Image 1 (cartoon, rainbow, N blue to C red):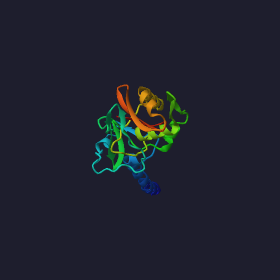
Image 2 (image 1 turned 60 degrees about the horizontal axis):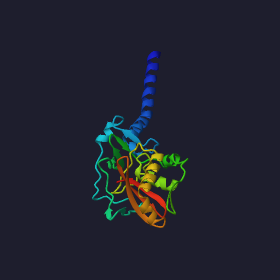
Image 3 (image 1 turned 90 degrees about the vertical axis):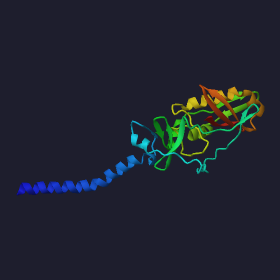
Image 4 (image 1 turned 45 degrees about the vertical axis):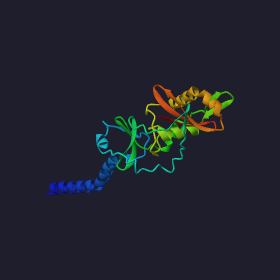
Length: 228
């Protein structure tokens, strides 16, 4: 009788403990399902890590989409001889899709969600202003300029803002790599930069490693850099 009572007490204790833990288990499962809602340093996931996430992706209805009012990125025309070119969405390589109603970036077999603000801050801790001089004009790429470009166009540092006409860097590009591309495009357009000077707002374009980029200049600062 005593042994039966001990067994019964242990069983009741187990049931009570399981009932107590069940909400936590359900919450953890919900957290996995709502991966997009969790802000974390590693803001990417591969197909092998979460295949279900990929099957639930939805296309964005761009006809009904309204650009994020907090984006603040200006739109300029591109200087290219006598031809005016407008940027377009680079959907074949990286594209914005929906996961659980939230915007994410799909790049091949990898998905990127909004990154925490601390990630880009930490990545730029040691960043020093880069300069390019042509003629009597010096063009700068400051930490603030770089931060804007990374948050808008680098999947690893993306701040979640979306525009209809938005393109993204290769996720493998380092901060130094982005800086080098910007300076390379500036050098390719040295004559235009020299004639426009540091009191103008304009865009130029160039190619680095087979990828075409648009570079935006605002009063001597390199403010934009994105794949065309």
